[in-house]
Image (cartoon, rainbow, N blue to C red):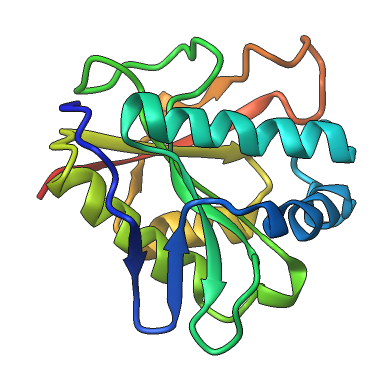
Length: 188
């Protein structure tokens, strides 16, 4: 990864992906407290944990030139969630074509589900990662039964080899969310 400075924002036909603002904290905390949005995660996040996540995201933009962009509709400003690139905080039992694992991920408010926002924004993020950061490969992963996220991964051209699936190291043996599927996309 070349560590290039991030652009000010990424635009798609319907969305603006931008850095985080203070006014994003409350809607992001509400999204992270929603049990349905967080169904495929070990727990919901309280306001302090949600704010700390934004702080880590912003630090990643400053230090690495990549992060999880705040997403808003061009028709109605306001934080809808995130889509972006991240380096996982855990060492994952996977092999990639780059020096470190970089994943594309998304988390959007329920009001945005089914509108095509996740794949639209993920395509822009992937293009940016391959062009600006010159990444050779970007991965994405989720729990096995997260069909909606798996569908997004497939829509953006990612592929899965079942031999790459893994148990998430942050979750204990026997945890219902431990098994993860891995999808990959190589730079075109």
